[in-house]
Image (cartoon, rainbow, N blue to C red):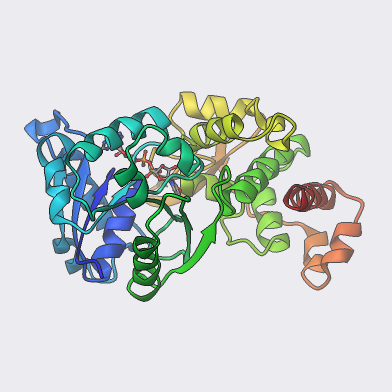
Length: 356
Ligand code: NAI
């Protein structure tokens, strides 16, 4: 079992994975790129720890678990990976940048060091194409979902070169120590969860605009009809970070066949471009589709208008036909209004894509 793990990339996922490992009693080394902020090269990882203590719901089971996480930067501390059993890479979703890091790891790694990537979309055979046999044998994709403490699913991908003993070690550890349900996936773009999930999210967002729904209306329908959490689709995009979507989509588009329906999403909705340009990328920024702002000393929730791009105080969606649909989904889908048309469009298209 693993007692010492390095996580590289102290962003949303890396810091969340580090916290969950610490929850399981593992000593973690959390590395990011060197920073020149406040004269502290470890600033990015240090700052990630500060954020972990503030995030709600908490990524930590006990706030004192944070002491299990040591911080550093890849320039000064990469060599410390050999004091660990496993390195989890959770850096930006960009093949070239990931390859560059792997090249550095390959040069110094000990024989039995396990390396895995948290990539959402990049196939394993692309990630390891330029690596030597030892790296290939020890490399896996371990795809944690956001937030890592709370989501049970963990996808694992291996290749014909993979050392099966190491794979079984990861599966056992993630099951028993981290409480995950580990699903073994083929090395296909987006694996299982994201191949279908990102399609569904994009379709739900694009159609909400096409059917002229508010973000609240779309989120209510998506959570009720799909049994998704209350975040629906736009709340989920805020949670995941809209800035991740271009990387995920570009990666997906460059890996799927040209007749794949993902190609319908090659042009982003205008509102996405506007929000990306203005750093309205969600909870990690000043806001996204929703934002909280102080009004007369109280936190007030605002939401963006998908057409005018303006914020106003968030209004609870009130969809009469959905109240009926709670009892009978078919009856809701049979209604002749834009809400049921939207739900049917997203649902039927996602099912059709999944079947294809
Ligand atoms: P993020 O943008 O929040 O964090 C990325 C971090 O990596 C940043 O702190 C950045 O400074 C650091 N970084 C960039 N290049 C680096 C390098 N060469 N060496 C060390 N650190 C470096 O990104 P996020 O969302 O945490 O995503 C990380 C990975 O996890 C990506 O592969 C993404 O596809 C995947 N993922 C993301 C999920 C999400 O919900 N955001 C869910 C599941 C997987």
